[in-house]
Length: 448
Image 1: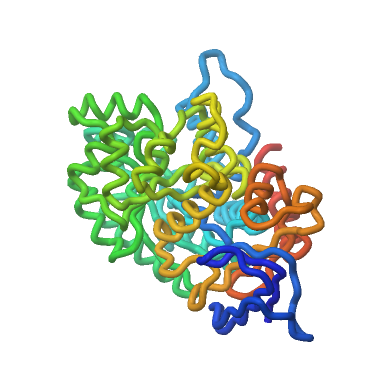
Image 2: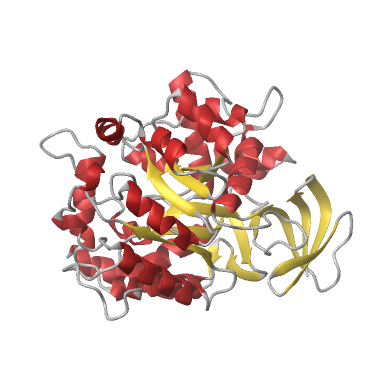
């Protein structure tokens, strides 16, 4: 039995909240009650958030692409660094790096991750004996750390629009449609051994799949999430226009029956018409503000999109820095810098910016990862984050000011429960030491 002085429930902040769990779910919530003698007592509870977009293995290259090259650096030069890094990764390396990334996610407020998994083959591009070998390693990292998993195997066949052949650096990603069907099948097998894991699919991007391939692989989602990179870079937009006469998001909305099953990752460069159409579609915009800033991608028009009813989730993408609150902060701060204004994304006069951002990420993230019930409610997974009430940033804070101080003032996380199991205590994952040691050993070898 858990008891909190205050907790954020679907109908707002409540005091004296007792939460009973059973079989990983929230079985009963009572408010305005005193703790039982045997209750595990804590101060502040908020729901765990969904990380809608992660490439787990990229955590290992964080900080390795910050040296300027002879020409202007951008996403495309960063991508070459990434290709060189992954060329040396073994299955054990992938599991070790991903596991450490997942520990950091849990310590920083994420209780579920959407793994956009495109590393399928060995360093020479050959199939492993089990075509889903690396997907099984992602699942193993989820099992060891306890984070919830939505596994999104990626279909990647081409290097640019119109079916241009892949380049050498992409050899570990490439599949035929038939091979991809086998990968998806193996992903379902790997996920079956995990509590409440699910599987969707991820056509990598319109530059990596042809329209025919997109139509052929979409049914493999079997009603689960469909994620796709879209309009992250201006070069991508320009190349798409040259190929089709339409911009990437415009093409998807007109040709791919985009609806609430879909998550368009980044969707950075949108016209006003695309922004409104994406909001109407019911799809989720999967935003990764820290990575988008790190790569120099651009700024998503959230100030226009949210008032139109657009849905969004947040992700950590390249995992250069893993922190749910920092992603939300970066989302708002980009708007402030762009518009030279404050509290741009707050829902209206007198409303909390932190609460607006948190509510949007909670509901949109759940939708994007195929979670039926999100938040602290009966029947939902018992995925709970407690904030450290002794943190000076929370002194005197009540209600939505708690979220504002977590997001904008750096208040600390104390404990995290995933399906009712306490995985983080005192801000540290219970398995941190062993997983960190293995991660460091791998990184030292790879960078030595």
